[in-house]
Image (cartoon, rainbow, N blue to C red; front, side):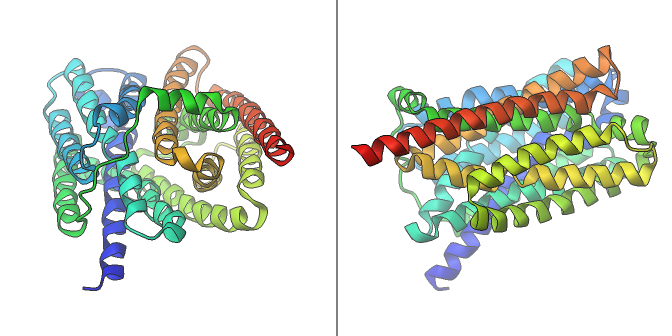
Length: 394
């Protein structure tokens, strides 16, 4: 097998690693009804498991860049995958909600060594001029987690129960680990990252505010997404047996959004694309408040906000790499961490808004976070333009 073909297969195997991490992090969204009944806790409490995963990931992912030192990225990724598999098995066997929280923490700790490390490995498999494409291929696994992973988990949950669903997910993760072990031979150590590297990022206003934008945007999405199943049921009358179809349509729409983002990003530039996506998603969530309460309208709205929302991530990564090429690996890790902080904030805000104001308040909470995202994005752009002017005058 020639090196180009092997590199391509390696990239797609790393994409599967991202797919497994994405599915493991959001599977509870599609299993919320069954898990709530089985563990005898509220649906917002099950949604809180997303917060547990996200907070653990957000704190541990950047620290792992320091603690792992010069450990081979391939070894780190494989350890992370097997740890995620163990976390999924612990989730399946959890006898109570407290044990479930511990299992989600273990799963998230494994995920810390999967997402950012897979991206770094992928970039190292190809020449410099193809690294943007490589990152897009690897990150596409997260898109496919929403297209196939979440509907698959929802369907399996209805077929064999939520516990066996997590057993199946653990088996899939182990299979992916063996695939990567066979196809990716890169055993080079990761570039050294120190605590001083973090200070470098925060001293540069443009990338620091850009990372904050990612967190605000993800929080906006998860204000609705964390409780999307009961939201669709109560707001639009979507029946439980229609949820798999709703998730599938939303997932397919997110793939379209990712493709459109690539095209618009090339034509308009990453910054203009990001501004359009943030404003567009805010308009979609405000429109959701006025739509008639019919199942097909609810599923269509879910598909549209999934398409617009997924258009954010490719131009975001492209812009980050352009803002600080010398800190690319660290910025990608911090971006992932920010996304999961946003996920946890969004899920927590979703649970609080649901309890205090009811389902109708979720789109309003999303719009509020999008206003913050637009503000941080504007601050990042202002710092970027200021730095560009300083470079020209130097």
